[in-house]
View 1: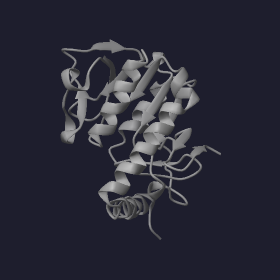
View 2: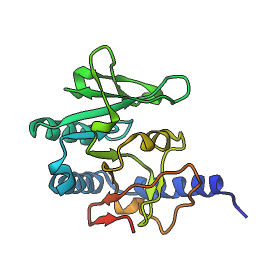
View 3: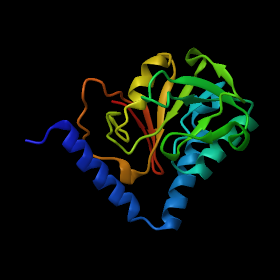
Length: 196
């Protein structure tokens, strides 16, 4: 029988293959719809401080989310992880993706601590978190580094943990281990899924 790690690796490959099969125009349309759903989402609209993981994903989507937050007067808080072990994350408020960010671990974007002001995890109202695959119960499959799993307990219980995903990233079930953390809400191009 496969152990959880092998199942996760298999799921990652399966989902990445599904996403890779989409045309560029399909991807752009789905991402735009997901972004628009986030902007209309009540928890996002009401939030003063938005935790956002810039990561190494779609930089255009990241830029549009950060710009929307700033246009609405929201603070944008982005984590910075220790370079050695991805541990001891700190949170920094950014004013601009271009000016306040630098290339970090594995090509991901991270805040430049020389330019940004530290903020408390307790100030976060909504957290937009990344992932590779999800199920309808809020189980999340990340890249395998465990960054979000270490960071999630630092967020306040009142902060909604939201992820943006295409329907192609939704699977029937994700094997969860004791250290794995769930998300509360999944926003896709077709629906909003609340953890059940």
